[in-house]
Length: 115
Image (cartoon, rainbow, N blue to C red; front, side):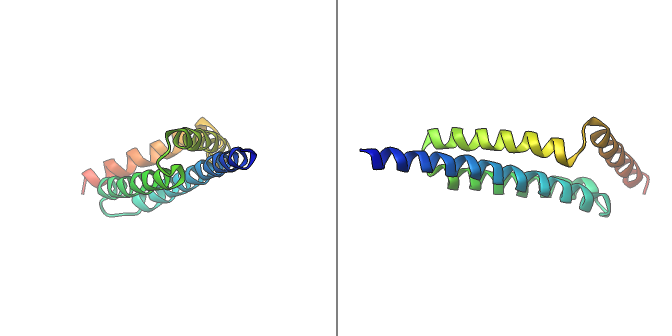
């Protein structure tokens, strides 16, 4: 009885840490796709393509870490939310950096429209 409870707790911890790992991947891939798309000839197409790939990898990882159990999926999603919150705080340094990225994307789209 105690071994089953301990095993379930370990599975929940594994799912939570997995959610944090997924969020680290998601934010890193987002950062890389923004940087890569800016230097691309077709930035909108590259951003959309890389966005679909990023979402597909994240969805597969959620299914892997949850093992088909909805409680583990919720725990994994909570880990993703926690990791994303801390990642946004440390990676983008608040709104100023996000606004700068949005401005660069807008300029890149405008520059590709004038070609």
